[in-house]
Amino acid sequence: MLSVRKRAWMIAASVVGMLAGAAQAADTVQWGVFSASGGDRLTGASQEAGNRYVLKTSAISVADIEGLLASQKRTDTDLQNVKSKLDAQGREFDEFKRKNGSSSSASDSQLSDLQRTVADQKSTIERQKSDIDSLKRSLDDLKRSVDTLSSKVK
Image (cartoon, rainbow, N blue to C red; front, side, top):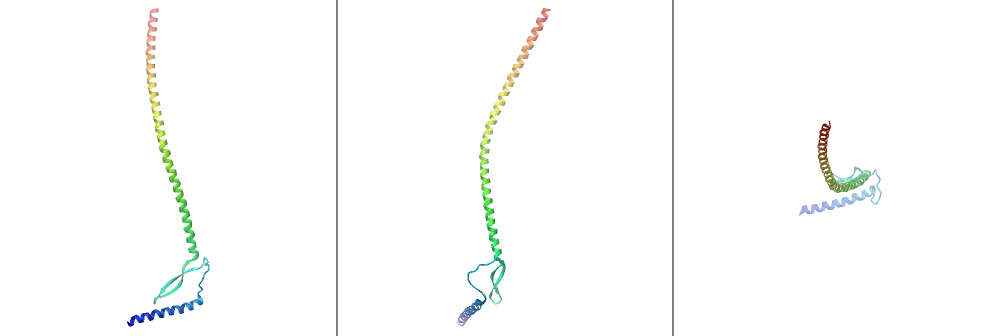
């Protein structure tokens, strides 16, 4: 029971000590609303030997934090620009696929038309070859007939 009372007294003494320290700090530290400049350093608490906390300035300045915020805004803007470009490219790709599909079917029908035309021209050429062969035979027959008549006339 004695140890519980001892702890309570230690806590009470600590609180009184902190209040006395705060009264002394009030002379050197000013509390209130103020605006920080870029060169001001951030303050952090550091635990020293004996579980004593001490306020110390850090290596981070207000300008560093402002720079990080500005960098984050630029990065967000760049990211939005990349996203919009990606969306635009996606739309263009979809449009290309649609056009390519329709032009593919158009190309297929044009190809079919060309194949029919080539087949028609081949059959026309074959018919004309046959007609030419027939004309050659007729010419040969006519030539023989002329030769025969010519030999009879002599």
